Figure 1 (cartoon, one colour):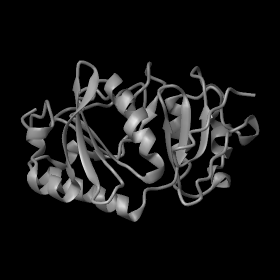
Figure 2 (cartoon, one colour):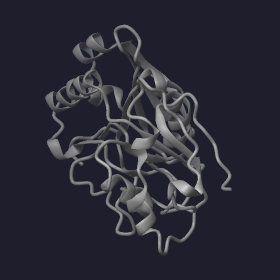
Figure 3 (cartoon, rainbow, N blue to C red):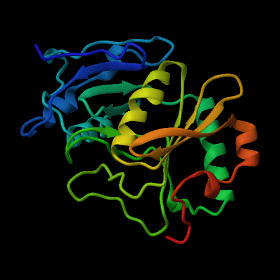
Figure 4 (cartoon, rainbow, N blue to C red):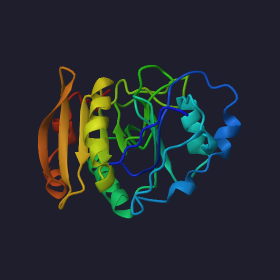
Length: 239
């Protein structure tokens, strides 16, 4: 039996601790894996540990993660830096409304469409085949290409900011685990929009390898008052 672990505070329908390594012969198993048996959303809070009978490969890499995502329109797949596979239901309508508001805010302050990228696969692991997240929104310098020929997951190098919109079930992951992972790979700014009343927006900036809170306000006020060019360290529209 694989060494397994469950994220009880997350909304994953599957959580499985995996080890990293080569991936020959796994495509058939990836195609036959069916996450729907574990639940369809946060309302269920369905969580299961993936066993060998579930057809998940072990070890798994970012290429495997991409194959799982390509074969499943109903879930989002992420692999933590320490090897936990998290499978989540699609974002809610409210989540996507907030996402759109933030994208429009960024665009209104001069960022081009190609600089504002929603939910890309971003490499957050220790080597080029481990650890992959999908931030809700990412912000990039102009003319910067983060693609990595070794993987479909882009490099975080050069990213201006990662933005996560928190749901009740993802609060610990977004505020603790991803905070540590994004800091470890050097993302200079991390914007978290909470699921509390008024949706508190918090900007964290990387200082000596650790995120420090620099700005906090309710989302409506945040979007009305603040300019991303001023609150995001390292922002430069000319790049």
